[in-house]
Length: 131
Figure 1 (spheres, one colour):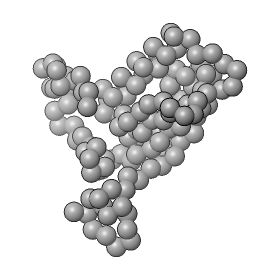
Figure 2 (cartoon, helix red, strand yellow):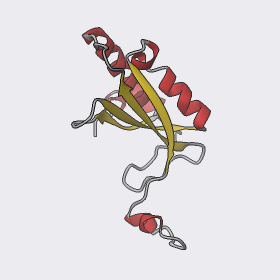
Figure 3 (cartoon, helix red, strand yellow):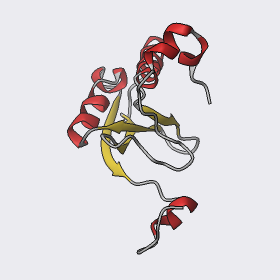
Figure 4 (cartoon, helix red, strand yellow):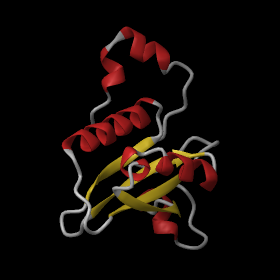
């Protein structure tokens, strides 16, 4: 995992008192939920290198804010996905709308509320308890 904020004293100090989510157990901070942002290429549009660079900077900013969980393009489909932390669906939609790919009309987007299922929550089996 690449967390550049841990490399400097200032970066570490900026996170003091911040509740971080555990990517292994999927336990987001109590005031945040997980959302999936699906980005779809708009047919017939080209994606300039400068737009990709702005998109990557956007991802870095989300990561520095503790909002980005996972992201990446699909290998078998023209588009990509971000998993983000947000207080509610409106906040997640605002994060999606602020992406340069979306602002510059290079991608459409949709937002979905997401619940991580894993061994620690018995894959969301009804009645299961957290381990």
